Length: 473
Ligand SMILES: [Zn+2]
Image 1 (spheres, rainbow, N blue to C red):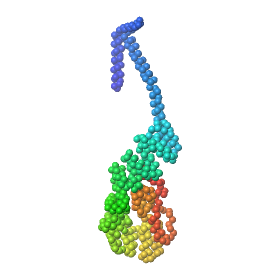
Image 2: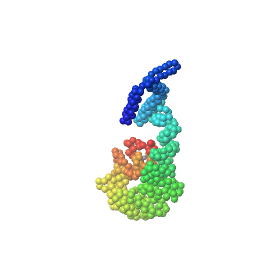
Image 3: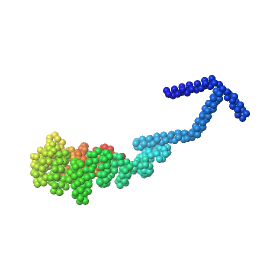
Image 4: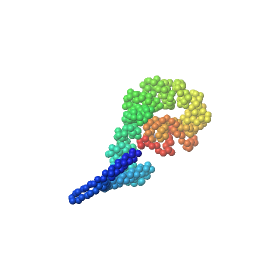
């Protein structure tokens, strides 16, 4: 709109100017070097305008000629870069698809088309080398990446993954520390550093990394507390090993306060209280835990803490414990166990039925074994006892410490899974039932069944793809 108004204004002024010149004609005479030119003012003005226009056009043409080589070279460079980035993205796609040959081809193209300093080119070259199984070449590319601040983190990440895969823990730890200094907010780096520190038994360093992660909200507070509890339990074991009882007690208290469901730590604390003649503390700790998470491992130290002198006293102590969580199967099992030991057959039978041995129920293996013991000891019913033992062989597996990462089931808790080495992955649960296994035809010896407890049961990892290690990005 304004452009049109401006154009019309300029046109009006030009028309007025032309009309004025036509209305006021005048003569111009030029004399130069013996030459004489007579003309009108209008013709001279037109000649001046034409000359100015021609000069401007010549100037523009001259400028065009000067800039042509630079423009051509820029266009060629842009085209090269476009092709380079296309090769780069095709290479990345090939890496994702696991096509090693195509990845290498595109990496070479990208290297040739883009300047060698292009950060992503080196990453692609390293990844394609890894796909081809050439770890040495990949390491060379990752090391080159360390020199450029832009790609240093990517280089460290690649070298760290290589070191973890090769099982070079010390080197991996050093690289993880460097990567953590560079990117302290990266959840993967922090988790990897924590895993490596805990796997190395550097519990104090692991604890400080854990606190750091909680502060930066890389993990939730309850998860950080749980990890801290496990670390405290491990620190207590270390203190115990060097005879520092006060430190061991302090760390055990921390562990039980932060994670009251960390049963092994609570049992250890109970034992420490009993050893220090603080039986009441041990009793109250067991009762506090039984209210939330009853566990068979608590029964023995509880009876010890109650200083029950005989079988009947043990039954009375178990009754006190069971009243805290009366509906729970573990309460019935604790009552049945103490009743069996005190030869109170009726009581034992009643609680075993409550715990799952009743009509139409599918009792767990340990209930079946206790029923077998009851039948044998009460009435010497060997046939019935054998029947229960056979039933135990196919019954649902007893709860164990089951790894949530790989399904490995063990009797003894540890901070790391013995199979996949994941930190704090063992939780008290019923291992997945393995169907299709042939049941033993005849079980002659109860001990044969007891040994089953010590076997490591394969978990869901049998058919599932291998779990991705937390050490991998
Ligand atoms: Zn595991």
